[in-house]
Length: 599
Image (cartoon, rainbow, N blue to C red):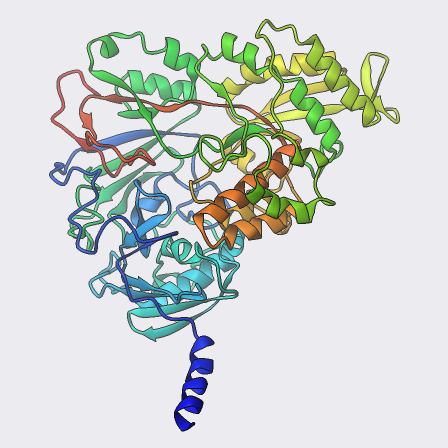
Protein backbone atom coordinates (compact mmCIF):
# COMPACT_ATOMS: atom_id res chain seq x y z
CA UNK A 1 0.00 0.00 0.00
CA UNK A 2 2.83 2.35 0.85
CA UNK A 3 4.43 1.56 -2.52
CA UNK A 4 1.19 2.34 -4.38
CA UNK A 5 0.74 5.64 -2.52
CA UNK A 6 4.29 6.67 -3.23
CA UNK A 7 3.89 5.75 -6.89
CA UNK A 8 0.69 7.80 -7.22
CA UNK A 9 2.28 10.81 -5.55
CA UNK A 10 5.25 10.60 -7.91
CA UNK A 11 2.96 10.21 -10.90
CA UNK A 12 0.88 13.24 -9.94
CA UNK A 13 4.02 15.29 -9.38
CA UNK A 14 5.81 14.33 -12.58
CA UNK A 15 2.84 14.73 -14.91
CA UNK A 16 2.72 18.42 -14.05
CA UNK A 17 6.28 18.94 -15.23
CA UNK A 18 7.35 19.12 -18.87
CA UNK A 19 10.38 16.95 -19.55
CA UNK A 20 13.43 18.99 -20.48
CA UNK A 21 15.08 18.39 -23.81
CA UNK A 22 18.78 17.57 -23.72
CA UNK A 23 21.02 20.47 -24.77
CA UNK A 24 21.66 20.29 -28.50
CA UNK A 25 23.71 22.04 -31.17
CA UNK A 26 20.75 23.02 -33.33
CA UNK A 27 17.00 23.44 -33.60
CA UNK A 28 14.36 22.64 -36.19
CA UNK A 29 10.70 23.63 -36.06
CA UNK A 30 9.50 20.06 -36.46
CA UNK A 31 11.88 17.17 -35.91
CA UNK A 32 15.66 17.22 -35.67
CA UNK A 33 17.97 19.48 -37.71
CA UNK A 34 19.57 17.81 -40.73
CA UNK A 35 23.20 18.37 -39.72
CA UNK A 36 24.75 16.42 -36.87
CA UNK A 37 26.57 17.93 -33.92
CA UNK A 38 30.09 18.03 -35.30
CA UNK A 39 29.37 18.81 -38.95
CA UNK A 40 32.39 20.31 -40.70
CA UNK A 41 30.63 23.12 -42.53
CA UNK A 42 27.40 23.90 -44.33
CA UNK A 43 27.01 21.79 -47.49
CA UNK A 44 26.53 24.89 -49.64
CA UNK A 45 29.78 26.70 -48.80
CA UNK A 46 33.25 26.46 -50.31
CA UNK A 47 35.44 25.82 -47.24
CA UNK A 48 38.53 26.66 -49.32
CA UNK A 49 37.17 30.00 -50.52
CA UNK A 50 40.04 32.52 -50.61
CA UNK A 51 39.95 35.55 -48.35
CA UNK A 52 40.63 39.01 -49.69
CA UNK A 53 39.46 41.69 -52.10
CA UNK A 54 36.73 44.28 -51.98
CA UNK A 55 33.07 43.88 -52.84
CA UNK A 56 31.22 46.99 -54.05
CA UNK A 57 27.43 46.99 -53.88
CA UNK A 58 24.93 49.68 -54.84
CA UNK A 59 22.39 51.11 -52.41
CA UNK A 60 19.66 53.60 -53.27
CA UNK A 61 19.07 56.95 -51.56
CA UNK A 62 21.21 57.88 -48.57
CA UNK A 63 21.67 57.13 -44.87
CA UNK A 64 21.93 59.15 -41.69
CA UNK A 65 22.09 56.45 -39.04
CA UNK A 66 24.32 53.54 -37.95
CA UNK A 67 21.76 52.11 -35.53
CA UNK A 68 19.50 49.69 -37.39
CA UNK A 69 17.42 48.87 -34.32
CA UNK A 70 15.38 52.07 -34.27
CA UNK A 71 12.68 53.15 -36.68
CA UNK A 72 14.13 56.66 -36.60
CA UNK A 73 16.31 57.88 -39.41
CA UNK A 74 17.53 55.93 -42.41
CA UNK A 75 19.92 53.16 -41.38
CA UNK A 76 22.94 52.33 -43.52
CA UNK A 77 22.94 49.11 -45.53
CA UNK A 78 24.86 46.11 -44.25
CA UNK A 79 24.80 46.82 -40.52
CA UNK A 80 23.90 43.22 -39.78
CA UNK A 81 27.48 42.33 -40.71
CA UNK A 82 28.81 43.72 -37.42
CA UNK A 83 26.54 41.65 -35.16
CA UNK A 84 26.31 38.01 -34.13
CA UNK A 85 23.11 36.19 -33.25
CA UNK A 86 22.63 33.39 -30.75
CA UNK A 87 22.13 30.91 -33.57
CA UNK A 88 22.80 30.85 -37.30
CA UNK A 89 19.94 30.10 -39.70
CA UNK A 90 20.44 27.40 -42.31
CA UNK A 91 19.82 28.37 -45.93
CA UNK A 92 18.98 24.77 -46.84
CA UNK A 93 16.37 23.83 -44.25
CA UNK A 94 13.07 25.59 -43.57
CA UNK A 95 13.24 26.88 -40.00
CA UNK A 96 16.45 25.27 -38.79
CA UNK A 97 19.35 26.93 -36.98
CA UNK A 98 22.68 25.98 -35.46
CA UNK A 99 24.63 27.45 -32.56
CA UNK A 100 26.73 30.57 -33.11
CA UNK A 101 27.07 32.63 -29.92
CA UNK A 102 25.11 29.85 -28.24
CA UNK A 103 27.05 26.59 -27.98
CA UNK A 104 23.94 24.62 -26.98
CA UNK A 105 20.21 25.19 -26.73
CA UNK A 106 17.46 23.30 -24.94
CA UNK A 107 13.78 23.64 -24.16
CA UNK A 108 11.14 21.64 -22.28
CA UNK A 109 8.86 19.46 -24.37
CA UNK A 110 5.94 21.85 -23.85
CA UNK A 111 7.91 24.77 -25.34
CA UNK A 112 7.39 26.95 -22.27
CA UNK A 113 10.96 28.31 -22.27
CA UNK A 114 14.33 28.04 -23.97
CA UNK A 115 17.81 27.89 -22.43
CA UNK A 116 20.97 29.00 -24.21
CA UNK A 117 24.49 28.16 -23.06
CA UNK A 118 26.92 30.65 -24.59
CA UNK A 119 30.36 29.90 -25.97
CA UNK A 120 32.98 31.15 -23.54
CA UNK A 121 35.18 32.35 -26.41
CA UNK A 122 32.46 34.65 -27.80
CA UNK A 123 33.57 38.28 -27.55
CA UNK A 124 32.78 41.76 -28.75
CA UNK A 125 35.15 43.72 -30.97
CA UNK A 126 36.75 45.38 -27.95
CA UNK A 127 37.72 41.98 -26.53
CA UNK A 128 35.10 41.92 -23.78
CA UNK A 129 33.28 38.58 -23.39
CA UNK A 130 29.69 38.01 -24.47
CA UNK A 131 27.72 37.07 -21.36
CA UNK A 132 24.22 36.05 -20.42
CA UNK A 133 23.54 39.55 -19.10
CA UNK A 134 24.18 40.89 -22.62
CA UNK A 135 21.52 38.54 -23.99
CA UNK A 136 19.01 39.61 -21.34
CA UNK A 137 19.81 43.26 -22.01
CA UNK A 138 19.48 42.82 -25.78
CA UNK A 139 16.04 41.28 -25.49
CA UNK A 140 14.70 44.04 -23.24
CA UNK A 141 16.41 46.89 -25.08
CA UNK A 142 15.14 45.80 -28.49
CA UNK A 143 11.58 45.50 -27.22
CA UNK A 144 11.81 48.95 -25.66
CA UNK A 145 13.36 50.56 -28.73
CA UNK A 146 11.38 49.16 -31.64
CA UNK A 147 7.67 48.33 -32.03
CA UNK A 148 8.51 45.47 -34.39
CA UNK A 149 10.46 43.67 -31.67
CA UNK A 150 7.70 44.34 -29.14
CA UNK A 151 5.34 42.38 -31.37
CA UNK A 152 7.90 39.78 -32.40
CA UNK A 153 8.87 38.95 -28.81
CA UNK A 154 5.39 39.43 -27.37
CA UNK A 155 5.27 35.90 -25.96
CA UNK A 156 8.45 36.36 -23.89
CA UNK A 157 7.59 36.60 -20.19
CA UNK A 158 11.05 37.11 -18.71
CA UNK A 159 14.63 35.93 -18.37
CA UNK A 160 16.61 34.03 -15.74
CA UNK A 161 20.40 34.35 -15.74
CA UNK A 162 21.60 30.90 -14.66
CA UNK A 163 25.30 31.69 -14.83
CA UNK A 164 27.76 33.99 -16.60
CA UNK A 165 27.20 32.11 -19.87
CA UNK A 166 23.76 30.58 -19.41
CA UNK A 167 20.31 32.13 -19.73
CA UNK A 168 16.77 30.84 -19.66
CA UNK A 169 14.06 32.81 -21.47
CA UNK A 170 10.55 32.10 -20.18
CA UNK A 171 7.47 32.24 -22.40
CA UNK A 172 4.08 33.72 -21.54
CA UNK A 173 2.37 30.57 -22.81
CA UNK A 174 3.49 27.07 -23.70
CA UNK A 175 3.20 25.58 -27.17
CA UNK A 176 4.90 28.20 -29.35
CA UNK A 177 7.30 25.89 -31.19
CA UNK A 178 8.81 28.68 -33.26
CA UNK A 179 9.76 30.96 -30.37
CA UNK A 180 13.05 29.17 -29.52
CA UNK A 181 14.10 29.61 -33.16
CA UNK A 182 13.01 33.24 -33.17
CA UNK A 183 15.05 33.93 -30.05
CA UNK A 184 17.98 32.21 -31.72
CA UNK A 185 17.90 35.08 -34.23
CA UNK A 186 18.41 37.61 -31.42
CA UNK A 187 21.35 39.95 -32.17
CA UNK A 188 23.49 40.09 -29.05
CA UNK A 189 24.32 43.67 -28.08
CA UNK A 190 26.93 44.77 -25.52
CA UNK A 191 25.17 45.96 -22.37
CA UNK A 192 28.21 47.88 -21.14
CA UNK A 193 28.36 49.89 -24.36
CA UNK A 194 24.67 50.76 -24.75
CA UNK A 195 24.11 51.70 -21.10
CA UNK A 196 26.79 54.39 -21.18
CA UNK A 197 25.54 57.95 -20.84
CA UNK A 198 24.51 59.50 -24.14
CA UNK A 199 23.76 56.22 -25.89
CA UNK A 200 20.26 54.97 -26.60
CA UNK A 201 19.07 52.12 -28.78
CA UNK A 202 16.00 54.09 -29.88
CA UNK A 203 18.08 57.04 -31.14
CA UNK A 204 20.01 57.65 -34.35
CA UNK A 205 23.79 57.86 -34.37
CA UNK A 206 26.68 58.19 -36.79
CA UNK A 207 29.13 56.79 -34.24
CA UNK A 208 30.04 53.20 -35.22
CA UNK A 209 28.47 50.95 -32.58
CA UNK A 210 30.26 48.05 -30.91
CA UNK A 211 29.49 44.62 -32.29
CA UNK A 212 30.87 41.09 -32.24
CA UNK A 213 30.37 39.98 -35.84
CA UNK A 214 32.66 39.12 -38.76
CA UNK A 215 32.98 42.77 -39.87
CA UNK A 216 33.59 46.16 -38.29
CA UNK A 217 32.54 49.51 -39.65
CA UNK A 218 35.45 51.13 -41.48
CA UNK A 219 35.32 54.28 -43.57
CA UNK A 220 32.09 56.31 -43.58
CA UNK A 221 31.16 59.02 -46.04
CA UNK A 222 27.91 60.07 -44.42
CA UNK A 223 24.95 59.53 -46.71
CA UNK A 224 27.13 58.44 -49.63
CA UNK A 225 29.06 55.28 -48.76
CA UNK A 226 29.95 52.94 -45.93
CA UNK A 227 32.72 50.33 -45.89
CA UNK A 228 32.87 47.29 -43.65
CA UNK A 229 36.24 45.71 -42.87
CA UNK A 230 36.67 42.01 -42.16
CA UNK A 231 37.66 41.30 -38.57
CA UNK A 232 40.70 39.05 -38.92
CA UNK A 233 40.46 38.22 -35.22
CA UNK A 234 36.79 37.28 -35.43
CA UNK A 235 36.19 34.96 -32.50
CA UNK A 236 33.93 32.60 -34.53
CA UNK A 237 36.10 32.31 -37.63
CA UNK A 238 36.82 28.59 -37.06
CA UNK A 239 33.28 27.48 -36.20
CA UNK A 240 31.48 25.12 -38.56
CA UNK A 241 28.69 27.65 -39.16
CA UNK A 242 31.18 30.27 -40.44
CA UNK A 243 33.56 28.08 -42.48
CA UNK A 244 33.79 29.28 -46.08
CA UNK A 245 31.93 32.51 -45.30
CA UNK A 246 32.77 36.20 -44.86
CA UNK A 247 35.51 36.10 -47.47
CA UNK A 248 35.84 39.73 -48.63
CA UNK A 249 38.31 41.94 -46.80
CA UNK A 250 36.07 44.92 -47.44
CA UNK A 251 32.42 45.33 -48.37
CA UNK A 252 31.48 48.80 -49.59
CA UNK A 253 27.93 50.05 -50.06
CA UNK A 254 27.89 52.98 -52.49
CA UNK A 255 24.73 55.09 -52.54
CA UNK A 256 23.09 56.31 -55.76
CA UNK A 257 20.16 58.61 -56.38
CA UNK A 258 18.05 56.00 -58.14
CA UNK A 259 18.19 52.53 -59.66
CA UNK A 260 18.94 53.79 -63.17
CA UNK A 261 22.15 55.44 -61.97
CA UNK A 262 23.02 52.31 -59.98
CA UNK A 263 22.68 50.18 -63.13
CA UNK A 264 24.96 52.53 -65.05
CA UNK A 265 27.50 52.18 -62.23
CA UNK A 266 27.42 48.40 -62.65
CA UNK A 267 28.05 48.67 -66.39
CA UNK A 268 30.90 51.11 -65.76
CA UNK A 269 32.58 48.66 -63.40
CA UNK A 270 32.03 50.84 -60.33
CA UNK A 271 29.77 48.22 -58.74
CA UNK A 272 30.43 44.47 -58.69
CA UNK A 273 27.03 42.85 -58.14
CA UNK A 274 23.36 43.50 -58.85
CA UNK A 275 20.09 41.71 -58.17
CA UNK A 276 17.99 42.63 -61.16
CA UNK A 277 14.40 43.51 -60.36
CA UNK A 278 13.58 45.19 -63.67
CA UNK A 279 12.27 42.91 -66.42
CA UNK A 280 12.89 45.68 -68.95
CA UNK A 281 16.55 46.06 -68.00
CA UNK A 282 17.01 42.28 -67.87
CA UNK A 283 15.57 41.95 -71.38
CA UNK A 284 17.21 44.97 -73.04
CA UNK A 285 19.84 46.56 -70.79
CA UNK A 286 22.64 44.01 -70.90
CA UNK A 287 23.42 44.12 -74.62
CA UNK A 288 26.95 45.42 -73.98
CA UNK A 289 30.45 44.08 -74.81
CA UNK A 290 31.22 43.15 -71.20
CA UNK A 291 28.32 40.68 -71.24
CA UNK A 292 29.03 39.18 -74.66
CA UNK A 293 32.68 38.76 -73.63
CA UNK A 294 31.55 37.07 -70.38
CA UNK A 295 33.31 39.63 -68.22
CA UNK A 296 29.98 40.71 -66.79
CA UNK A 297 28.00 37.57 -66.05
CA UNK A 298 24.25 37.08 -65.93
CA UNK A 299 22.74 34.18 -64.03
CA UNK A 300 19.27 33.02 -63.09
CA UNK A 301 19.05 31.15 -59.82
CA UNK A 302 15.93 29.12 -59.01
CA UNK A 303 14.96 29.17 -55.34
CA UNK A 304 12.70 26.80 -53.44
CA UNK A 305 11.53 29.34 -50.90
CA UNK A 306 8.09 30.90 -51.21
CA UNK A 307 7.55 34.01 -53.31
CA UNK A 308 5.30 35.79 -50.81
CA UNK A 309 3.13 38.66 -52.00
CA UNK A 310 4.07 41.83 -53.87
CA UNK A 311 1.04 44.00 -54.42
CA UNK A 312 -0.67 47.34 -54.68
CA UNK A 313 -1.52 47.87 -51.02
CA UNK A 314 -4.42 50.05 -49.91
CA UNK A 315 -4.51 51.79 -46.55
CA UNK A 316 -7.68 50.51 -44.89
CA UNK A 317 -7.32 53.18 -42.21
CA UNK A 318 -8.70 55.55 -44.84
CA UNK A 319 -12.05 55.65 -46.59
CA UNK A 320 -13.03 54.18 -49.03
CA UNK A 321 -10.24 51.59 -48.82
CA UNK A 322 -11.82 50.25 -45.63
CA UNK A 323 -14.55 48.68 -47.80
CA UNK A 324 -14.01 45.22 -49.30
CA UNK A 325 -16.31 45.96 -52.26
CA UNK A 326 -14.18 48.93 -53.25
CA UNK A 327 -10.93 46.99 -52.90
CA UNK A 328 -12.32 44.14 -55.00
CA UNK A 329 -13.38 46.61 -57.69
CA UNK A 330 -9.85 48.01 -57.83
CA UNK A 331 -8.51 44.53 -58.60
CA UNK A 332 -10.92 44.15 -61.53
CA UNK A 333 -9.47 47.34 -63.02
CA UNK A 334 -5.90 45.99 -63.08
CA UNK A 335 -4.86 44.34 -66.35
CA UNK A 336 -1.88 42.16 -65.49
CA UNK A 337 -1.86 40.24 -68.76
CA UNK A 338 -1.48 43.40 -70.87
CA UNK A 339 1.16 44.75 -68.48
CA UNK A 340 3.16 41.52 -68.54
CA UNK A 341 3.05 41.35 -72.33
CA UNK A 342 3.86 44.98 -73.05
CA UNK A 343 6.00 46.12 -70.12
CA UNK A 344 7.54 42.97 -68.62
CA UNK A 345 8.48 41.01 -71.77
CA UNK A 346 6.38 38.10 -70.52
CA UNK A 347 8.82 37.35 -67.69
CA UNK A 348 6.35 37.22 -64.80
CA UNK A 349 3.45 35.16 -63.50
CA UNK A 350 0.54 36.67 -61.57
CA UNK A 351 0.67 36.18 -57.84
CA UNK A 352 -2.45 34.56 -56.45
CA UNK A 353 -1.58 33.83 -52.83
CA UNK A 354 0.03 35.53 -49.85
CA UNK A 355 2.16 32.36 -49.64
CA UNK A 356 2.83 32.00 -53.36
CA UNK A 357 5.15 29.27 -54.55
CA UNK A 358 4.84 26.94 -51.57
CA UNK A 359 2.61 24.24 -50.13
CA UNK A 360 1.24 26.90 -47.78
CA UNK A 361 -0.78 28.57 -50.56
CA UNK A 362 -4.49 27.81 -50.53
CA UNK A 363 -5.81 26.01 -53.62
CA UNK A 364 -9.29 24.98 -54.74
CA UNK A 365 -11.87 24.51 -52.00
CA UNK A 366 -10.93 24.27 -48.32
CA UNK A 367 -9.80 20.85 -47.16
CA UNK A 368 -11.25 19.15 -44.10
CA UNK A 369 -8.15 20.21 -42.16
CA UNK A 370 -8.65 23.86 -43.18
CA UNK A 371 -12.35 23.74 -42.35
CA UNK A 372 -11.48 22.86 -38.75
CA UNK A 373 -10.04 26.37 -38.49
CA UNK A 374 -12.54 28.17 -40.74
CA UNK A 375 -15.89 26.73 -39.60
CA UNK A 376 -15.80 28.23 -36.07
CA UNK A 377 -15.25 31.62 -37.74
CA UNK A 378 -18.09 31.29 -40.25
CA UNK A 379 -19.97 34.32 -38.90
CA UNK A 380 -16.83 36.50 -38.99
CA UNK A 381 -15.45 35.83 -42.47
CA UNK A 382 -16.78 36.31 -46.03
CA UNK A 383 -19.00 33.45 -47.26
CA UNK A 384 -16.80 33.14 -50.36
CA UNK A 385 -14.02 31.82 -48.09
CA UNK A 386 -15.77 28.44 -48.10
CA UNK A 387 -15.91 28.22 -51.90
CA UNK A 388 -12.95 27.89 -54.24
CA UNK A 389 -10.03 30.18 -53.41
CA UNK A 390 -10.56 33.76 -54.55
CA UNK A 391 -8.63 34.31 -57.78
CA UNK A 392 -7.59 37.32 -59.83
CA UNK A 393 -9.44 38.40 -62.98
CA UNK A 394 -7.72 37.35 -66.22
CA UNK A 395 -7.77 39.33 -69.47
CA UNK A 396 -6.74 38.32 -73.00
CA UNK A 397 -3.82 40.77 -72.92
CA UNK A 398 -5.24 42.94 -75.70
CA UNK A 399 -5.88 45.91 -73.43
CA UNK A 400 -9.63 45.63 -73.92
CA UNK A 401 -11.00 44.95 -70.44
CA UNK A 402 -14.54 46.28 -70.85
CA UNK A 403 -15.96 43.15 -69.20
CA UNK A 404 -13.66 43.56 -66.20
CA UNK A 405 -14.51 47.25 -65.89
CA UNK A 406 -18.23 46.46 -65.98
CA UNK A 407 -17.70 44.12 -63.05
CA UNK A 408 -15.69 46.80 -61.22
CA UNK A 409 -18.38 49.40 -61.89
CA UNK A 410 -21.08 47.08 -60.53
CA UNK A 411 -19.14 46.54 -57.32
CA UNK A 412 -18.60 50.28 -56.89
CA UNK A 413 -22.29 50.95 -57.45
CA UNK A 414 -23.09 48.32 -54.84
CA UNK A 415 -20.87 50.32 -52.47
CA UNK A 416 -22.82 53.50 -53.26
CA UNK A 417 -20.54 55.08 -55.87
CA UNK A 418 -22.14 56.59 -58.98
CA UNK A 419 -20.94 58.54 -62.01
CA UNK A 420 -21.77 62.23 -61.65
CA UNK A 421 -20.49 64.64 -64.27
CA UNK A 422 -18.00 62.08 -65.53
CA UNK A 423 -16.53 61.50 -62.07
CA UNK A 424 -17.18 58.69 -59.61
CA UNK A 425 -18.83 60.16 -56.52
CA UNK A 426 -20.62 59.11 -53.35
CA UNK A 427 -22.72 61.64 -51.51
CA UNK A 428 -21.20 64.30 -53.74
CA UNK A 429 -17.61 63.43 -52.77
CA UNK A 430 -15.36 62.34 -55.67
CA UNK A 431 -13.26 59.16 -55.52
CA UNK A 432 -9.64 60.33 -55.45
CA UNK A 433 -6.53 58.34 -54.67
CA UNK A 434 -2.77 58.71 -54.80
CA UNK A 435 -0.12 56.06 -55.44
CA UNK A 436 2.89 56.91 -53.28
CA UNK A 437 6.08 55.66 -54.96
CA UNK A 438 9.77 55.60 -54.13
CA UNK A 439 11.04 54.08 -57.37
CA UNK A 440 10.61 56.30 -60.45
CA UNK A 441 10.65 53.18 -62.66
CA UNK A 442 7.31 52.16 -61.16
CA UNK A 443 5.56 55.19 -62.61
CA UNK A 444 5.34 53.59 -66.06
CA UNK A 445 3.90 50.44 -64.46
CA UNK A 446 1.23 52.33 -62.54
CA UNK A 447 0.30 54.53 -65.53
CA UNK A 448 -1.84 51.97 -67.44
CA UNK A 449 -3.56 51.00 -64.18
CA UNK A 450 -4.43 54.65 -63.60
CA UNK A 451 -5.88 54.88 -67.11
CA UNK A 452 -8.22 52.02 -66.30
CA UNK A 453 -9.20 53.63 -63.00
CA UNK A 454 -9.96 56.86 -64.83
CA UNK A 455 -12.34 54.92 -67.10
CA UNK A 456 -14.26 54.14 -63.90
CA UNK A 457 -14.38 57.84 -63.01
CA UNK A 458 -11.68 57.60 -60.33
CA UNK A 459 -9.14 60.41 -60.12
CA UNK A 460 -5.82 58.66 -59.49
CA UNK A 461 -2.36 60.23 -59.37
CA UNK A 462 1.22 59.25 -58.51
CA UNK A 463 3.67 60.96 -56.19
CA UNK A 464 7.38 60.04 -56.15
CA UNK A 465 9.38 60.96 -53.06
CA UNK A 466 12.89 60.17 -51.80
CA UNK A 467 13.58 57.06 -49.70
CA UNK A 468 13.82 58.89 -46.38
CA UNK A 469 10.50 60.68 -46.86
CA UNK A 470 8.94 57.47 -48.11
CA UNK A 471 9.99 55.50 -45.04
CA UNK A 472 8.70 58.24 -42.76
CA UNK A 473 5.35 58.18 -44.56
CA UNK A 474 5.18 54.40 -44.20
CA UNK A 475 6.11 54.56 -40.52
CA UNK A 476 3.15 56.86 -39.88
CA UNK A 477 0.85 55.12 -42.43
CA UNK A 478 0.42 58.35 -44.35
CA UNK A 479 -0.62 57.06 -47.79
CA UNK A 480 -3.56 55.91 -49.89
CA UNK A 481 -1.85 53.23 -51.98
CA UNK A 482 1.71 51.92 -52.21
CA UNK A 483 3.64 49.04 -53.72
CA UNK A 484 4.75 46.67 -50.97
CA UNK A 485 6.06 43.16 -50.52
CA UNK A 486 5.27 40.66 -47.78
CA UNK A 487 8.07 38.10 -47.74
CA UNK A 488 7.24 34.65 -46.42
CA UNK A 489 9.30 31.71 -45.24
CA UNK A 490 8.33 28.07 -45.61
CA UNK A 491 7.51 27.99 -41.89
CA UNK A 492 5.52 31.14 -41.07
CA UNK A 493 5.03 32.07 -37.45
CA UNK A 494 5.23 35.05 -35.10
CA UNK A 495 6.00 37.54 -37.90
CA UNK A 496 2.41 37.08 -39.12
CA UNK A 497 1.26 39.15 -36.15
CA UNK A 498 3.27 42.08 -37.41
CA UNK A 499 1.89 41.67 -40.93
CA UNK A 500 -1.81 41.27 -40.23
CA UNK A 501 -2.84 41.47 -36.54
CA UNK A 502 -5.13 44.05 -34.99
CA UNK A 503 -2.50 44.82 -32.37
CA UNK A 504 0.02 45.90 -35.02
CA UNK A 505 -2.41 47.98 -37.09
CA UNK A 506 -1.53 51.26 -35.40
CA UNK A 507 2.01 50.46 -34.24
CA UNK A 508 4.33 53.11 -35.75
CA UNK A 509 6.88 51.60 -38.10
CA UNK A 510 5.13 48.23 -38.17
CA UNK A 511 4.55 45.95 -41.13
CA UNK A 512 0.76 45.89 -41.01
CA UNK A 513 0.76 48.43 -43.81
CA UNK A 514 -2.76 47.47 -44.82
CA UNK A 515 -4.14 48.28 -41.37
CA UNK A 516 -5.98 44.99 -40.89
CA UNK A 517 -8.09 44.79 -37.74
CA UNK A 518 -9.99 41.52 -38.01
CA UNK A 519 -10.68 39.17 -35.07
CA UNK A 520 -10.89 36.20 -37.44
CA UNK A 521 -7.45 36.97 -38.83
CA UNK A 522 -6.12 37.36 -35.28
CA UNK A 523 -7.50 33.93 -34.37
CA UNK A 524 -5.96 32.23 -37.39
CA UNK A 525 -2.58 33.84 -36.71
CA UNK A 526 -2.56 32.35 -33.21
CA UNK A 527 -3.60 28.94 -34.55
CA UNK A 528 -0.70 29.11 -36.97
CA UNK A 529 1.82 30.16 -34.33
CA UNK A 530 0.79 27.44 -31.88
CA UNK A 531 0.48 24.64 -34.45
CA UNK A 532 1.72 21.35 -32.98
CA UNK A 533 2.69 19.70 -36.27
CA UNK A 534 3.72 20.58 -39.81
CA UNK A 535 0.35 19.32 -41.07
CA UNK A 536 -1.49 21.62 -38.68
CA UNK A 537 0.75 24.56 -39.60
CA UNK A 538 0.06 24.09 -43.32
CA UNK A 539 -3.70 23.87 -42.79
CA UNK A 540 -3.80 26.95 -40.54
CA UNK A 541 -1.69 28.95 -43.00
CA UNK A 542 -3.91 28.00 -45.93
CA UNK A 543 -6.95 29.03 -43.91
CA UNK A 544 -5.34 32.40 -43.18
CA UNK A 545 -4.46 32.78 -46.86
CA UNK A 546 -8.10 32.22 -47.85
CA UNK A 547 -9.41 34.83 -45.43
CA UNK A 548 -6.86 37.44 -46.51
CA UNK A 549 -7.70 36.84 -50.18
CA UNK A 550 -11.46 36.85 -49.59
CA UNK A 551 -11.19 40.31 -48.01
CA UNK A 552 -9.39 41.71 -51.09
CA UNK A 553 -6.87 43.63 -49.01
CA UNK A 554 -4.47 44.06 -51.94
CA UNK A 555 -4.27 43.93 -55.72
CA UNK A 556 -1.70 41.16 -56.24
CA UNK A 557 1.11 41.90 -58.65
CA UNK A 558 3.60 39.37 -59.99
CA UNK A 559 6.60 37.16 -59.31
CA UNK A 560 9.47 35.65 -61.24
CA UNK A 561 10.32 31.95 -60.96
CA UNK A 562 13.98 32.74 -60.30
CA UNK A 563 16.45 35.33 -59.06
CA UNK A 564 18.19 37.40 -61.75
CA UNK A 565 21.81 38.20 -60.96
CA UNK A 566 24.47 40.24 -62.75
CA UNK A 567 28.05 40.35 -61.48
CA UNK A 568 31.58 40.92 -62.72
CA UNK A 569 33.44 37.66 -63.27
CA UNK A 570 36.01 38.47 -60.60
CA UNK A 571 33.29 37.30 -58.20
CA UNK A 572 32.55 33.63 -57.62
CA UNK A 573 30.06 31.59 -55.64
CA UNK A 574 29.82 27.90 -54.68
CA UNK A 575 28.75 25.48 -57.41
CA UNK A 576 26.18 24.03 -55.06
CA UNK A 577 24.14 27.03 -53.92
CA UNK A 578 21.70 26.93 -50.99
CA UNK A 579 18.09 26.21 -51.86
CA UNK A 580 16.52 28.95 -49.73
CA UNK A 581 18.64 32.02 -50.44
CA UNK A 582 21.45 33.66 -52.37
CA UNK A 583 23.96 33.52 -49.54
CA UNK A 584 25.13 36.95 -50.65
CA UNK A 585 27.58 38.32 -49.74
CA UNK A 586 28.84 35.87 -47.13
CA UNK A 587 29.16 32.75 -49.35
CA UNK A 588 30.79 34.59 -52.26
CA UNK A 589 34.45 35.45 -52.82
CA UNK A 590 36.77 37.32 -55.15
CA UNK A 591 38.97 35.56 -57.67
CA UNK A 592 41.95 37.22 -59.36
CA UNK A 593 40.60 40.18 -61.29
CA UNK A 594 41.26 40.30 -65.02
CA UNK A 595 42.09 43.49 -66.98
CA UNK A 596 39.00 45.62 -67.68
CA UNK A 597 36.91 43.70 -65.17
CA UNK A 598 35.03 45.66 -62.54
CA UNK A 599 37.38 48.64 -62.72
